[in-house]
Image (cartoon, rainbow, N blue to C red; front, side, top):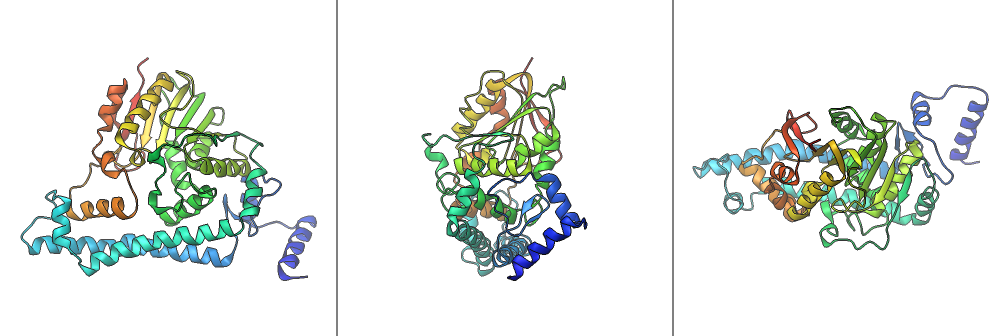
Length: 396
């Protein structure tokens, strides 16, 4: 008998004899339904399935820590260096310089280059090691998803014949295959974004906080909720937990994302409906939802599609319903005009494949909401960045 078999047998025997499990195991069982074919060889930590090998887990933990160093300490040093370079030329780094001027001043400064290089290489290594795992054991992971495709709680709708818009085919964040071109995009996205959040969202803490921020309509009626661009459904699940009696839908153009999200929701025992659909063409009836929300959707869209999404949100909301988009610049903090931030956004756009960043940063989202018919409160409840967030209400 090998060590793993021995430990599993001892655990089974302990349970049979009535010995208590650890608090983590109790919490995991309390929040997870389990299903035939579930692949979690190393168990869970709360609601998060541990990565299947110590080697992969240690790699990801290192990359998460390194990312924290890169985007905190190294980025701070680079920002300070950019300020120094501007002042040495008698220029104000806070004076809203053009990106052409920023690139001219910064040039090939080694400290700034090191900051950008390490951040991007960390990102690439994160994706690469995760993709190797899931593609290397593709049969097992496909079987795991197939075991829940048609099971509940909740439902899954895939549309393999959907014509994917060109705007959605980019490898956003340089994730290989993007959100639509890799069958394991959901798996890779989930653990990769845990790295992005540097360990602060392993239990969906951030998305759960956003779900608490989403305001109900003034009349308090919440029977149906729509999460646009839901990716793997973390906010969707959190909304269902906040409003357990509501019918909650999450839609995303990425079929692999919603497929993984459905499997995860089944595993967690949460009744949500996930569908592969377009945010600008949801296929839902007019006046169907009480709440429409989204998280970091709009900065991944061309400006014209963003306007169509806003119009679609207005169409599917019932009179009195609320639209609560959460993204960069939907909060009370305006875009920065510093040289360092200008450079940060430029290389994020150029090298991290944030394709639509400049279109988004030039989009007047409050005006787009008003044009669609919403009454707009630019000082709605706080959600993410700043002390408030955009809130649209469909007039009754």
